[in-house]
Amino acid sequence: MSIALRTLDDGAWISVNDSRQVSVSDVWSLATGAFCDCSPAYVLLEAFVDVGVDGSTVVAHAVGQCLECGTRDSIEQLPVGAMIDGDFHPYDPEGVQWRLERDGEGA
Image (tube, rainbow, N blue to C red; front, side, top):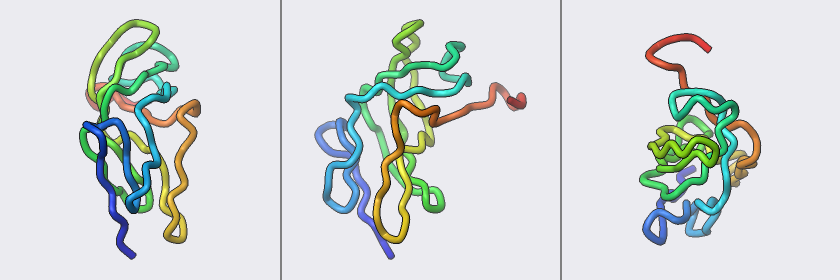
């Protein structure tokens, strides 16, 4: 089964099968990682740059800013939801969604 994924409105939304599903207006709680040293990092997304699928997980390349320390950076492969039986199920932005390892170091 194929799904249509794209960004809309200059990166403000992720569209899944022509329906706006994920907005940049949410604050995402991200695990400590390469984004910044805050634990967790509360990141306000500014724009979605690209969107794709990794297995059944919908992932986004986004740009955001940490509300605690002010770090502004890009986030690659941010899991924003999952495709289950052909339906999109968005992840809760308040849950820890993403973890990066620094320069190959383990968590």
